Length: 586
Image 1 (cartoon, rainbow, N blue to C red):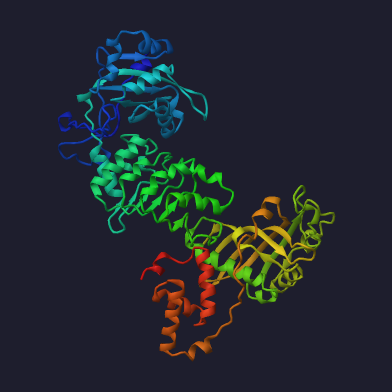
Image 2 (tube, rainbow, N blue to C red; image 1 turned 45 degrees about the horizontal axis):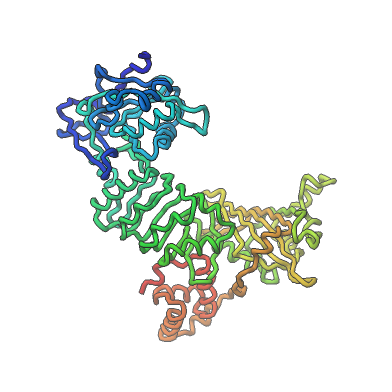
């Protein structure tokens, strides 16, 4: 037997008397799928850093499988008595991954579990020994048989394939007595917020109570089922919010056992088809996060994505952070913000900026730019598009600062506009425009205490000078500086304009944009209203918008009690998902 394979493993988790350990079998209904963890009958001092010692002496009839021929002989030609050790639930087996120490433990164990699938293999006490990695498992006969049939090779998409060595009957079950129920219970307890009725299972297998004991990824359907079953028993029907983000989950059938869920976070998992959401149609889901799943890549636009998701969740009110309107009511493209606390600032700025920009007189934008602001613009033609033959970007090309095409590099400096007055004069010379806010995609790439960077791209059109208006594609990068509390000015802006792609033309301007209103301060008119007048206006706005009176009053106050402006403001905010659900609670 290879000396490397004979090496004994000692897991540094606790030094304890074996009399303090007891075994409790836990299964999910499958005889070959028990889950295990350490459980102490007596209190263990500093149990968080305690150590469990694996026995040093190999059993006399332990069997080592280290070659493909041995593996195949055991599964195909060896006497059953030699292979029966695999099926015994009272034996521990050791699996060694040759040269596995250079890889992350999650990757190694996940690949081995996938190779053994659909059979159960729950690794415990994973550790690195020199260049190798190793762990123990039990109740995994069918999984080990499949590994043997695979000639002890585990496919690795990130490098050379793994070669493994299997030590059957490495230890008796009573030598390492494990029970995961206590560890799972404590981990669930730590992740549950009783006030919000929220269970946070993000990256659950990395919880401190589990990471050093057992590898239990929720991407394994039976493990997910077992954990949710424990949670249901532990918290009864009180789970209203469930966060399963970052678990590589593909199968969500087990969620059906939690009918109380209303808010569900499935971000960054492995859901690859919209039909995978079918189990959710029997739940009353109000809020769903699905960003970061492969299924999202199947959609180029937001409308069909929302439609397909809502086919499975008729009660859905918010998707990926966007408040959904009534059927046929358009919503803005999703934002990708590094700091969600700036969402309101970004939305308010963009709405105000483009309303003024498209209002017909850009001189109204005075005050938006810092006195020392910088502005530059580039423009280019996109060939091979429906818009290419009629692009006519001359008015943009004149001031374009495309360094690759400048014949006179002195213009690299002269084409930068400095100061608010020069910037306003520059953009005033550009053609009139009408932006399609439903085409916008927004990101904040940088956020600091008093500064943030906003990137926005989309399409706009110029008034028709021929039979059809000219449709452009644009991207703008704004650097905003907070000059006063909650008051920002642009200190740097870069604008890039090209003729729109054929796909952009087909998808643009499908929805009517609300009329542009440059609000005037009507404080004097508001001062002439009595409380009775204001109360009547609150009632009217509440009836029309279905908001409660508190939020209707707030909306009117912000519009200085001009009900027309209040309705326009509500409509715009509602489309953009900025009206909170609590505004409609009466």
